[in-house]
Length: 81
Image 1 (cartoon, rainbow, N blue to C red):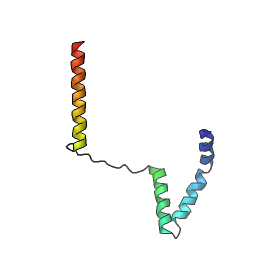
Image 2: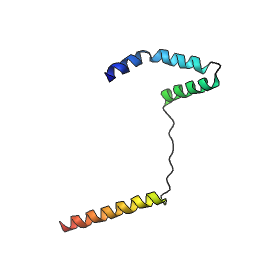
Image 3: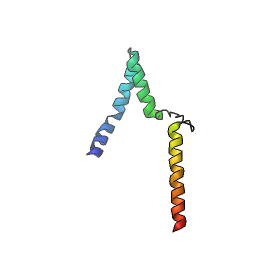
Image 4: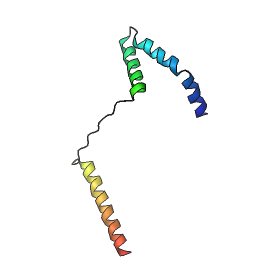
C-alpha cells in the first residue's frame, strides 16, 4: 500500500512543483517564502544544522563517567575469565 501511495504522489510531482513555482511568484509573501523553502528543500536537500556540544557540560561528563566505569568493569571481568 505504501508503494501505491508513493507512486500516485509521484505521478503528480511535476504538477506540484509547477504549482509551488506559481505560489512562489504570487503576491503573498508568506506563501511565497514557504513555496521557496519547499522547492529548495526538494531540489538541494534541507540545510544541515550544526549542533554544538560542550564536552564539559554536566550531562556529558556524567555519561562519560558511566561509560568509563562500564568499560573498566568489562575489562576487569574479561581479565578474570
